[in-house]
Image 1 (cartoon, rainbow, N blue to C red):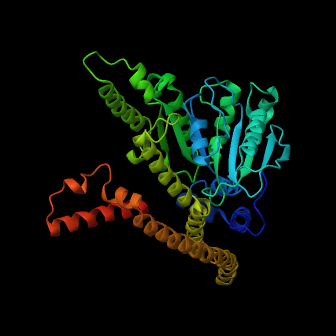
Image 2 (cartoon, rainbow, N blue to C red):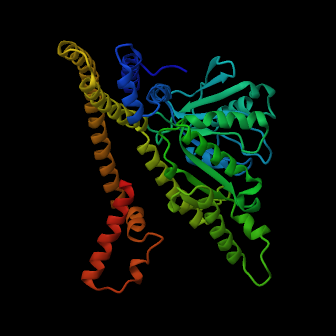
Image 3 (cartoon, one colour):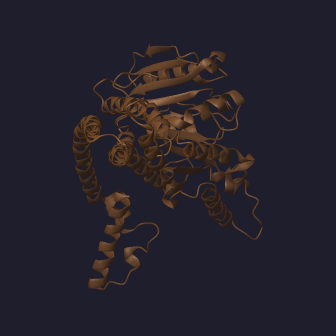
Length: 446
């Protein structure tokens, strides 16, 4: 894996961890100090190694996963507003496909042996011809039905202008869960690189949870978290897209005395509960109900859900912009503080003469002071960046609140009674409006 650019914050922080590791592994760092750190920060050397490794993961991958034909390709096409991927009813995608914002239109393939190849595409993605060129090229590289060579790729990286993908955030299209063992292995191997997930659930297939396939990948994610392989992943930000609700009305096993609407509502309630059971951290507002393939002007509810999903996704993308730096800086800060405490504690118990104690203290404190100085410099830069992000987010929220869609969403959220149905008493009505605005602001802050 290629290290980020030398001057990048990730690389600077990684170098700090390397310098700290040398100190901790040196003979000058005595056993008493090691014992103190093992108590305050268990497995600190292993965690430093994991921090260094995680900082090399420059991309912030939002993984789109789900069973074969659940609607992943349709979802990604609608997000990109381009027909780049072609959905199929049978397993066809054989590799991981990374989609990133890029000024140039190009594809980078990585073989299983690590070799890479850049494929520049001389076309305009804004034209149907350019779109088709990109689509056909991706099909040739990722579709098992088009080329057996696609199985030899570890990943296919496609870049073209995608404004909503900020910073290093990428969308990752994965082969369908429950496919061949070789394909499923590629999905599992990529999981540690993800910072967030979007699971597409086909409600037309036994309620969307058939054969225990989706729970299997969710359990794998939990195991990776327990092993500290996904330190920057927030389980509360997982998104579930429940798709193909039109199949409930067509194929539902409803009784003669119940309507299609009753059957759909029953399935919706049961499915949400199933999702909460297998992923307790999920936020209810991150569970969406759509008909992706047949979404049009007449399917107002589904289009509204897709709009809400886009808002949630953009919020998650924004929140993950500096997630790795923030997480590892907190760990470094804690470890340096405990090192200082351990040094003072160890010296207090030492039988060395005063001169030796003073010399050893100065030596360790000089190293720690130098590390803290470097860390403070990075922290100030990061805090400045965070302030800019906060200001930009505040402007975005204000602009959104000024739009008709924003006013409607904020003042009449789905879980609240419409303002038109509330009796108009000036003082109470004013309080209700303020309360709804505060609810929206709190939602943005969280």
